[in-house]
Length: 205
Ligand SMILES: C[S@@+](CC[C@H](N)C(=O)[O-])C[C@H]1O[C@@H](n2cnc3c(N)ncnc32)[C@H](O)[C@@H]1O
Image 1: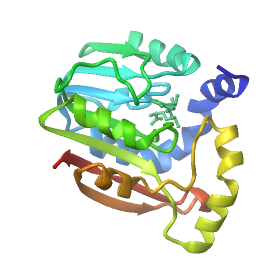
Image 2: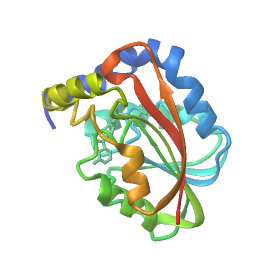
Image 3: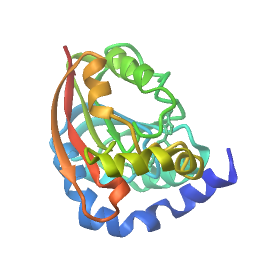
């Protein structure tokens, strides 16, 4: 793990505080609070989503970065109400049984994974019949001039920010992987290269 990933983990909660409060928290709440059953969260980071879970039986947090896991472990230890297990799996190969999960959650993760198609295949493998995949992700802008900048900046951006890509067309990738999707497109006016987001749920078709 690099110095950059250590720095990102150390600064993540404080750097995101205003964006979380103003923009992201309502969407996290909207998708996470209604969830029930056994939940697998991929790329849990520092554990920002943990306070939003309410009526679940069990949460499995999966996070491959050891620095992120340090902060995540602290939140897990401080949490009460339902059991939380911690895995160090990459989402491309999750250490979870086939068809054992009611809901897979990904927030701000599909921009960073090495192989979106493989992650989506894994999500299908672990979901129970009738299970769902819920997500909140920043995506490639629909505005061509912004897209141009996203493509220009993505290699530097991903080098600096732990493989985060600005220009992924994640909604299309979820559909192409064989999910039926309900997607809401969101525009945030805070930083134009990160303005376009999607929030929604998907079920294997
Ligand atoms: C921007 S952070 C988001 C953290 C958290 N989900 C949130 O909503 O705040 C991206 C996270 O994805 C994780 N990540 C990167 N590549 C991954 C992969 N292949 N599988 C699973 N997680 C990955 C990173 O370690 C990091 O914790």
